[in-house]
Image: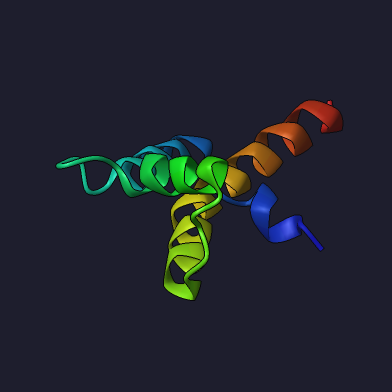
Length: 73
């Protein structure tokens, strides 16, 4: 199921994950804004939930890739 993740280059995945997590930089990154909304209980609109998912997805894929790399050795 996760064999396609094993083929992703880690350096490129790190660059994409950091880039998407920090965009847009001004006034504040969407990921931080959505996490703040989640902690305050104001993350209710579907577009905000989708935005949280899209900005955190590369970080989740990177975490899965690193875990699979560590457990395969």
